[in-house]
Amino acid sequence: MKKLFTPLSNGSVTSPQGYYASGVISGIKKDKAKDIALILSEVPAEVAATFTTNQVKAAPVRVSMQHAKNGRVLGILANAGNANACTGLLGLKNAMQMTETVARELNAKAKEFLVCSTGRIGINLPMTKVISGIKKAVKALKADGGLDAAQAIMTSDSKHKSYAIEFEIDGKKVRVGGIAKGAGMIHPNMATMLAFITTDAVIDKKSLQRVTEDAVEMTFNRISIDGDTSTNDTVIVLANGKAGNNPIRSQHPSRELFRTALTHVMKTLSRMIVEDGEGISKVVEVCVKGAASAREAKAAAQSIATSALVKCSWCGGDPNWGRIMDAIGYSNAKVKEELVEIYFDGLLAVSNGRATKIPVKRLKTVMAKRNFTITVQLHLGAGEYTILTTDFTEKYVEFNKGE
Image (cartoon, rainbow, N blue to C red; front, side, top):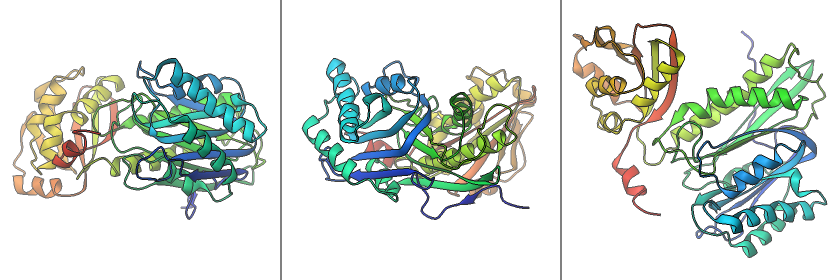
């Protein structure tokens, strides 16, 4: 069977046609690592975005939400090491100054740039360093600068996250590439993560926003490390049309192919985030099936994925399915204990709400793996939901005792 997509070696946001990027050191981070990233399109690009649902929104989120409504944009500017969140009117002024500075350096308009920040909350940006860094980032722009940009948005990440694919639409080669950051404060709608996706596909703004929202819901909104939703979370997709395909609109025969491609890139990046979770030792896929509705399946899955007791048992390699039963029982999902089945990588540990004869030793073998799946069958309907999550470890607690 022919593959739909071809992964690209060292793929990133500069893999699609017509994009440049850079990552430079400005001095925001104390360890003198790269901390200013810039992504630029050769031509104005359609933009789609989703933002944190936290009621406390960082200044750059507020600015980007407004700029994303204005029409086409040229690029994305981001800094790491300082979230510019809970910084009041000065924070808004600084976020706007960042867009004004990059626009001035590129003879463009401030509204043609989206801005993002990630790092510690409640501290004002060192704007002298930031402005100097933006000017360096403009001069450092290059066609293969995607990996530099990926490194520049890292905070507690142990590795950069980057990926790109190629496929065909209307006989034209189309590419989708992306970079992301995130390792902690990860939970749906959305988390301490940034994701910047670029494509050279021709697609109208309305369709791009719709497929972006669909893709985010199936990927970045289905990961959870610690149950915390942050103040700065942003996913941005740019489409500059350089591939030259027929415009993708609601009735385009390849609209679904493009949506699948975008979802594939986001899913790959979202899994990289979970795999790089702060102090984790296990990556667990939680699948709830047979719920009364999709909403109830989601409630049960998220209850399992965020239970501290469940996550601690995963860390210890203890197949304590009683904690899973407890978590679904206090969720907002309808549960009939006597119907519940629980599987550990396909091994039936619980049937009709009671333990089966599967030896605990076999279940512990599953729990000893780095990656495994917990499946819960409620037998109450057709609702299904899957979320990717992790365990809790001593290292996670140690890492997060202070900043």
